[in-house]
Length: 371
Ligand SMILES: Nc1nc2c(c(=O)[nH]1)N[C@H]1C(S)=C(S)[C@@H](COP(=O)(O)O)O[C@H]1N2
Ligand SMILES: [Mo]
Image 1 (cartoon, protein in one colour):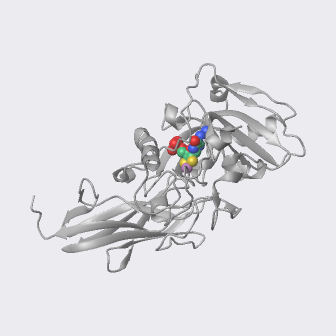
Image 2 (cartoon, rainbow, N blue to C red):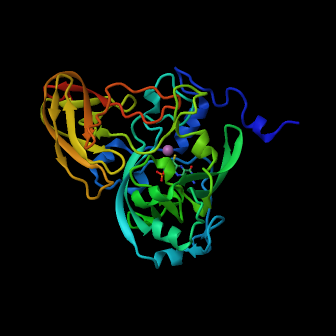
Image 3 (cartoon, helix red, strand yellow):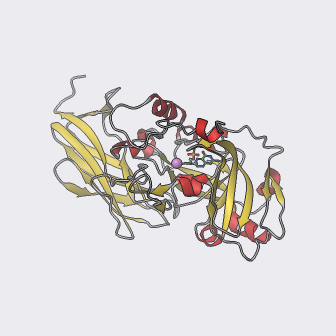
């Protein structure tokens, strides 16, 4: 008998690696999962409608009036919370930079057939909610708890496995990362595509940990085996490599595109003369940005930094450049307080995760504009 797993795991449907033209599947994924427009890097807070999106399955339609968050198995004193209950708890607002682990995948060759991000799967929002650690404590996780699992209301198939999107964290991670239970983004109730009415935000980690449409929290006495925890989001050298988990953000920077673009190639056009180039840099685990350098195609210049509003928001960088006529490839490179620096070339990963190689921007500079 044909199983659902056979139907949704047909060979080639999720080819391991490929190069060259993008498939219809990749195009469809990229139509659903939009990226932040890089010109929006000028804003400390990414305008809500322009924050990138990554949605594995379908956006569930949950009713804010009736939705409850349930503390399920593994707790000695489980309870449920409505949105009003959550709003009545102590509230905090935190700027947090979120980046998809697959950001930069298109530059890792050969690539995995998945969401084909270039540079744009990153944004910073002010997230409002309540700290999760005290709530977990109130629900009294059993003494043998090793992990807490967060499950969303969205379901689907990946690699032939039907599942609800779920991710786990240890109690220690929940406390030390300041994990937030969030119902507002930039002062507005969460939009459906960003997890309405409730999600978690795991500051300093790649986005997959920040479970949207949060429905249940459970305590497990053994490591969680959900597909999104053990079957993906692992750095792997080849497809049979068990790999290591993808966790905190790697140091990275991006540039606000200078000048004006060509519609299809996004190559830039600029008048010669003094220009202010600027952008953002961020890293994981609360490490701060210690240095950003700008390269004009000839040499590296040290940029000026403006510290972020919070421990988990991005840092603004600015650099003065005397644009001389010619064709240039501009780039920027950040270093964090751990001494980690962005590589010049993408490092290999079988799923294209964690590519933090320097961005390259093609620009054509002329003495005086023709238009
Ligand atoms: N329930 C659920 N949570 C999820 C996802 C999902 O598909 N389902 N996608 C994750 C991934 S991979 C990322 S990068 C972030 C994206 O959050 P955003 O769409 O609000 O930017 O949500 C994460 N949380
Ligand atoms: Mo992601």
